[in-house]
Image (cartoon, rainbow over all chains, first blue to last red; front, side):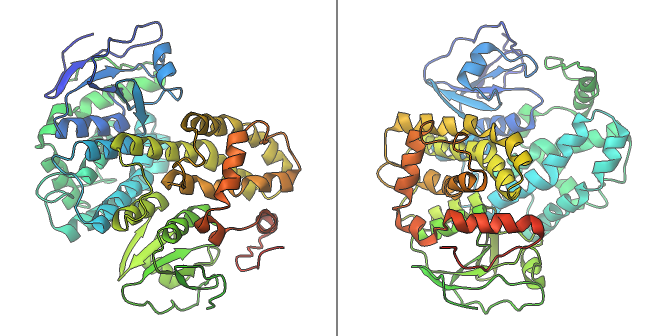
Amino acid sequence: MRRSGAIAPCVMSTLHLAAGSKCPPYQSGMMRCYSMKYCPYAKRTLLILTAKNIKHDIVNINLQSKPEWFLEKNPLGKVPTLELDGRLMYESLVTCDYLEEAYPDPPLYPRDAWSKGQDRMLIELWNSKVAFILNKIVTAGGDREVYSQIITNIPEGLELFETELTKRNTKYFGGARPGMLDYMIWPWGERIPVLLLLWGDETAISKRQFPKLFSWMECMKEDPAVKALYINPKTYVKYYQDRPNGLFQFDMEQVP
Amino acid sequence: MRRSGAIAPCVMSTLHLAAGSKCPPYQSGMMRCYSMKYCPYAKRTLLILTAKNIKHDIVNINLQSKPEWFLEKNPLGKVPTLELDGRLMYESLVTCDYLEEAYPDPPLYPRDAWSKGQDRMLIELWNSKVAFILNKIVTAGGDREVYSQIITNIPEGLELFETELTKRNTKYFGGARPGMLDYMIWPWGERIPVLLLLWGDETAISKRQFPKLFSWMECMKEDPAVKALYINPKTYVKYYQDRPNGLFQFDMEQVP
């Protein structure tokens, strides 16, 4: 267990615990998030905990060798999982919507029900049109064949968001500050530069093609919650390149 | 266009319109739902519109030959799609959550944020553990090989819900009345008797194994919204048996 890497409202963050480990003691009333450092879904929940300044601890899970006590808590063994005084909740969007309702400050959805529905619809679109494909590409860990087969499907999804930003004509999807939609899609935004490093392909997703989205990515990096949890592209590359060889470097430090 | 099949708050319901058709005139201020009679996802939205007594019209879409004007409205061509004064929203859970917020009476989620999150988590679990598999089985339209390969995966998912009902010890998941969780999973509950008719297999999902769920299914059939939209198992069988032969009988009457 270590405190390094702990960020603002995060009081404790563990190494990635594996089978045979013991569950770190739980402090009554504390929000706990079971996570994995490189999981984009877990990152959604961590972003909301951080953006809302909710005091929490993070217990990282070695997803290749899940602790027995974790599988007892959540038989699906999935991260993110929230724990609060013995009660458990999982599914990234569900946990984030829960946090929004239980900790309304700052509000991350538009007030108007229709606009809120629009943002939630766009999150689902991102899931199916962008995240799903990006996940396949990065976990292929440098396999150019997989990359070439799939990358052509990405621009169609990204164009929807380029158009949406143009229509809204705001810095963030949420307006002057990032909202729920921004945070829910960011974990994949953070991975887009990884494609360039892994394949040196500047044409697939370029600033020229998606100027608004690229400027959005720069603005997101200024947000305190995003900054606190930021993982640089080189670190992702190292993680994803080692994975196909069976090496899951959950606990490596950031590559400078 | 016809009014037959129109139910309580539904003022108009069309046949399944195909390419080459014209979009029925839209009445200002009216909630419109683009649907397909046998789509379980569209049924979710219709259940909520009905349970909340929201005046609406239904435009049914021939999903095998989508009207050009529908693809202009929603390039993904998916149902359910809600339209309200030129604005569009899709994704079944997103539309239902929107209706819950915009038309809070009767409330369909628990008031407490954590309990609400639990219900939304269970809906996601149903999606991945039950709905996904049942969709594959019924659309196989009587192919016993597909059925045998997949049916064994169903009980694991259903057991989660049997346990949950036992724990809650209520008539419905929502308590004395159906709530959002009940309505979101019902379109597949309605299909469970179809398995028996298609394969005569009484052992896969039996009342003996899931007594609480079977009694829940009976109670659901008493609910006015469920009743208004009910499709009997024989009609489903006819629809699903014809599908693999390229015959999509969107507009057949109920089989008695």
